[in-house]
Length: 224
Image (cartoon, rainbow, N blue to C red; front, side, top):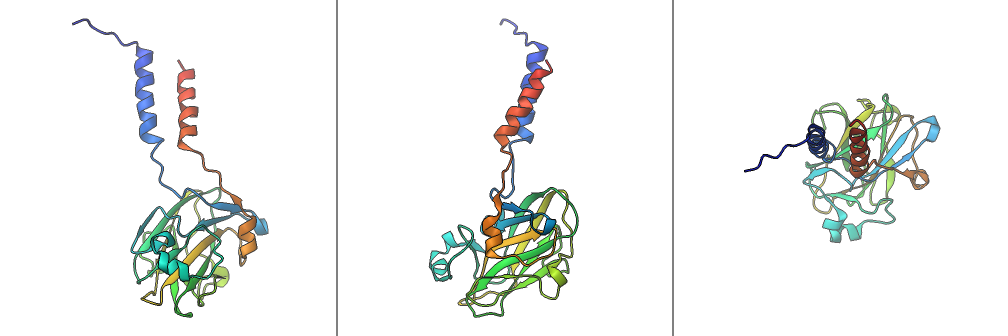
């Protein structure tokens, strides 16, 4: 059999391409969000239905009968519905800054008030272990609510520059008392958001893996 000699440069390019596919393409994070710069700060607005991972709670598209009973308008394309306590939804996003974080949620419920959600930023602790905010619902009408007993709704944990994680979890929920979550907002400055603030926020522009692949591949080739 004739021996095939592979040029060293071609071999390096081949291995580099494999490494790019291995490390660049797998991306797990929120795919859609909005950003704003209100009160001289930075905000990110994320749909609760746009989770990376969830257990025990579902988006409205999977609970159409319940979603149909929820008052409109929603701000997001879909909402998150909790039928029982427990369960969770996880989100991953990028922040350009580090520091204090203030969290608000647009929430509702089918009980008529007295329900609530946990929301926790950058913590491995379970939701009720002290690192979370408790966001109360006030009936079927959507409203922006901050953390219970937390001045300015400041998170016990801070934002990180780069990758951050959020977990939301229903604190109470039951049949005919389901809790609903539309949007949550994380801000570097304290203020109570409005629907109009969300509507004016600009859609985030993620760096697509394909774009990263092209740029990185071009850089590698230029070295040979």
